[in-house]
Image (cartoon, rainbow, N blue to C red; front, side, top):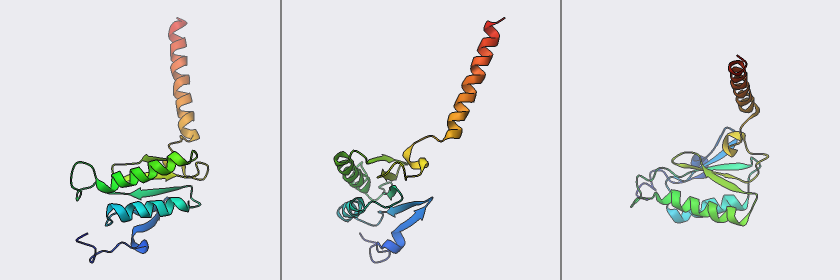
Length: 138
């Protein structure tokens, strides 16, 4: 990339931990090196149970589809197709999360609802039924 000398891709600058998850920023990489970085992570799943890959929005990509987003999605789709326990999903316009172990991964990335959310749904349904019963009983 034209900016390679200004801000080279390094683990120290492009891999961080956010909310108990490793976040790998693929910005500043071309599609080939980004795909190799994703595959290298997939070969050695972290103990966190998930990894976030930041692809960016593709403002420097030619065409309609952001190059890093497409390359990352392709690598994740291939890997998850070969391993039934793995999954991935978009968690924003420029981020993918790969889930290697649903039991270890934080609920905010697995899409699983926590018990307070289910309790809220239950209470809302209960209030609805009590209100409905009150109208029917009249």
